[in-house]
Length: 208
Length: 208
Length: 208
Image (cartoon, rainbow over all chains, first blue to last red; front, side):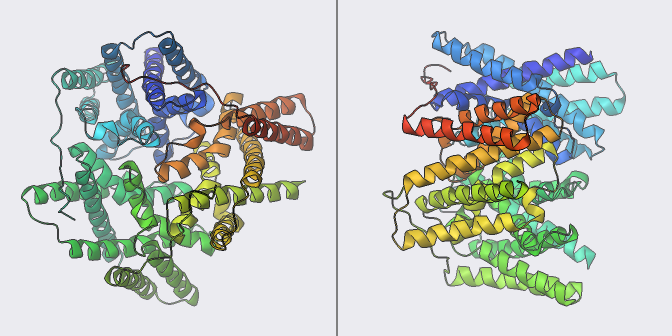
């Protein structure tokens, strides 16, 4: 179980690194840029969470598997695209949703171990899931995608709330983890499938 | 007195959250984006200060009133604008100046408690006041307003210096806090009223 | 030796602050903006490294010489350009390469003192060298230069690897420091001289 969780985490790291490498490619960055954006996307959310919670050492500091997996995923993406293989868009979206689910549950759990209020635990779950992608977009000079596209963070919020509720109810660890991950996964996949988005807030320039 | 300070702090959080929500609206973000930008604007400066000073737990981690106030202010802004009520621009600027004053004094005081050199305390006061707004602008893909508009951070520097000087002179806490806040408030309001700005540094492209 | 290192560090701070001030000038920022961008460029990389390694107090918190040197360098740049003196571009590039060399070695050494894996030490060396410049570019709304221009971070990687290898071999401290710095310096200068760059990753829009 512990192992399964660790490998899921690394899978999430790899998928997020791929989305980072693709964004770097769209900006015509060089190999170093691709590596940095991939690593920031994959590990930025968890790092920010650990810094704010004072949860040291930050995961990837002691275990260099994380950096290795993110780097390999980035280089693999470049090689794959160079061989002019197309990116399987749907496959990537599903994998990304799975990564999001893992990160959200991990983030919520780490926060709960620090005895924070439940609302803070939800925020930490969401932050772990989405902050890396926000950093990727900000460094690449784009307004973060998740602030104006289909439901993404909302899936994290729901999954995190379900995880906390089940934990409070005392369900076994494998069960609350599994159900919470499925909630994130299905919410996100439903949002992609039916183009669900949150209402947007258009402020005309005449205001302020 | 302690209570008065706490409520002033929450008032500052609310005002800064409103400016964040308005910026998110100008970028047509969705509800989640509005919440994130509001929270980052309201709590980003204090969080960065706490991380750099190693001042844990970060304020909003244990007391979820901060997140709650920022979120309510953000949602309230959206509802208010949806009802096509105009934003009272002058009122918002005055409220923002008040928030700036509170944050500057709090930031300087927290730094002083960590036995840092006085120059570092001033920097922490300014950082608490302005870094949230800088993060808001960077995430929203704008060059930070405070780097090229009317005097803003300069008001924090003055207020922070006055606060430190009075503390060194041994005035009562309510007095140095009050005077320092008034200094920030009046400097900022004077800057708005008479469009005072710092000299700008225009570098033509032929240099470097 | 200790002193020589400290002054080299301050020299690096000054040079990086100048590149920050010049970028702020290209964006027509005001004096406060120039100061902030200069300080962030000069101290941002080391600060991020210290936060992630939990290496407190952050260097400039206790010793205000760092902030003072960065501020003086920024103000000096503005005055220099105002007197319409041209910037000696080649001189600045060489000085910047020297600053990069110092920061890389310091960053790697600080990381090694925290008993991290060697790969993490390299990352910390690179981060100390380049993260300040990345923050400068992101705040100024530019895609970071080092992700698409001549070899820059690669010089840090090489220098950091050489430093670690020599340390493992047990060479005297002045020797591994000196050689590693020369490696960074010459790699960077060679890259500038012959316009060496890493291969770039162009992703056409039809992918993803």
